[in-house]
Length: 165
Image (tube, rainbow, N blue to C red):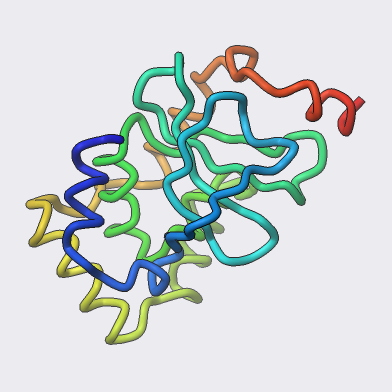
């Protein structure tokens, strides 16, 4: 388990408020990459976050409802994922970044989904507890990562190929 992620969990914060739910079962879906370590759940539609053995520290979002394209990289590592979280206020924006066609539409999404005061307290506690700051230019970071990542490197299970075809 990533040391930054261990430290995050040790803070004892309500990560559900920021879309990074911790579950006991952590049962993967057909589209979860093979040898994935699950970091958390969005709490809707089976969306979850993981790192994959053999692909370095890259963090991925897995969205079983996203048709033929259910996996997307969202951060080079856990620290960057958390810096994106601080910048965006919730994991929903990084998880959905691949669907936005412009910085403007991404920014509009962030405005609509501004965190409430309790969520801001959790975000501030993450920043203080891990000594990290919000990611500057989160949309640019996400798009550059997603445009440069070789998705052919993601190892899927046989079940994935059976379902997708």
